[in-house]
Length: 281
Image (tube, rainbow, N blue to C red):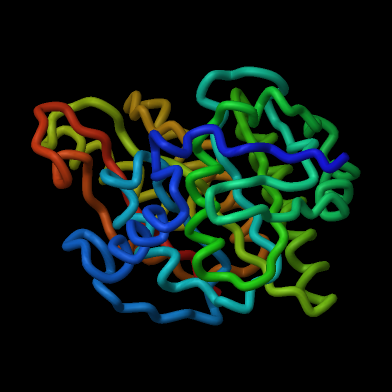
């Protein structure tokens, strides 16, 4: 029997109906004032980037800015997300053969996962780390909308050190290079929101500190800045992993595509920050 990881947040973070979900994604890409408004410009030099993971009504249009830039020939999407609840292994691949959303099933690249585990001794295979987590799942419908056939490698992180972020990032860079040498186009995505539940002005300030390090391609600086300023950026470790990988791959530029917050979608006194960032060689 096939092992399928069912959608955990369909019907809450995004619609559970396939047609409704597709329509909402089209709105995020083409019509929403916070989205790219139809400006789809696939970029061959794109290694990957950072995208937010809140409910689509809040962060979907922001995430669409990154996805509007991806090379639609990508055959492997690696998504590094955060384990918000801290359940299961602190660095975990999924044991499933497929992940499912209302748009269908996507196969997990088990071979790529095995290669990664062979290099990273703290990386486990643990269903609990992925079971109810949304940070990786919400990226999948965007990928399903844009890519025809692809495999998927989800990596969930909680409580990893700077050195472990570096080691995982360097291993991902080697995997990226091996897949590329074999003719496979790879996309690397870090799933993260920015600061949580502060005023719009304070969110702007704290987000700006974190984004400064991201745009400088400085993963160690990001982790230090987040810790020193108590920035509640939930995906700091996934973003650092992505930046360490990008450095190994010779990334030349980090481009801020969109920065906004939840109050831009629905007025509120305390907001969550979101950004789409593209990493290019």
